[in-house]
Length: 588
Image (cartoon, rainbow, N blue to C red; front, side, top):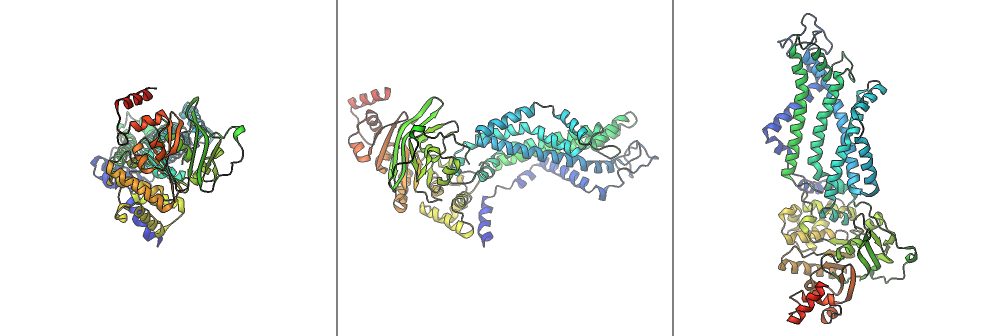
């Protein structure tokens, strides 16, 4: 039953058919065919090779191609084709070993450094700098001497020492992708770090990863051929591609032809690897905008004098913050903030751009930037003392206790996946549902946000949705864990006026149905007047006024509040004296 329900969602979430895109390119098809022929032929060498790799025929030495010997013979009368097939086995296997090590270390360390940042990033980056300063080939020679000419040990060493640059590439891509809103949305939805990395970040890095792998696989093959040329790794008379090049070089005056098959097979394989890597990257970029848990947040506990047990807080109080300060170095962006939110209450957090309202919201979610220092005399979030809480404690309340609706719905949804995939992933992470119950819950959430034909919406990609539909999907995602508090960060900014009204009405209805508190972060006092019950006005990171909406608009006490109201034409008509006072306050 489970398979029959989950399979359709998996199929709709699958990326576009890259294989068909690759096969449409003739050059790519040729490169892929060449690689397949070489790999299969070498793997089947004991079956298809016309002679043994060491079989000699001294009466037919240094022959050019004939019917009996399709690629000729060497100075001992050994069949060149047979030796190429047998020699390809250690060549391809060694390159594969080096590439696997290169891939494992490069991707793993790059993801850890780029995603977790902080101490882990510094340690990994410093280690990479040291590794990249080492002479790789000299160390490979030393390993061959220590490990009794072991080609496997040499290739493992090569992959490890060459992965430093790859770590940097993956780290840079991870850091950039980590800042995307859909990654933040996945974090708030309660999706685990591993799933975020594999589903949202790694797919965005497919292009650079494939290019690095294809280039390194070719490099590993050439290095291995160089070792064979020097008689290292595969010891003569056993065949290896590099060894055959060395043998051909010794008799180049008598038989120049011998360099063609031995050198040609190496060049052909390296060229095919490069072309195939480019093609996979291009197909990935053109067919799908592949995209994508938070790293450790640097949160400082309250000062010793302010620590201690929390005072008694009403059971209906969801948020109780006193003396919240957020700093970046010596710069305070939020200072001395007091904020409380009760169950079922709608509170507006208002201020101009740069006033610190979004930073306050991020503090409540535990998603402040890595270099932010967060202090508070008191910080209770749904019963959690957040003053000294770490990532695990915040993860326990994100999604299931506190939800987030961001201001850019189209950016908050990973374009690589369908709505059904995104929604079911969030539900699964927060509730543990599986099978038919998972799909039923997804449909139910889409109905809750008043989306028609929810089954059809599940199969759509974000780019197939209108702005209003996308915002409703984001709201549905934020409701997946039945949060008691919803933080709406400028939820109507990217929408036209009609859709704004619909979204606000939807949030109001959801509040009534679920008894859910809402913290509305906005700069639009018109929205606050229509939607909120209480409002907190911010100026330069401090609270300048906090009152119920009716009282504040009837008699604003602070000059900055009056300036904000006067800057909203829908709320008041200004005379000349009012405009002069407003301009004076803004200039100050």
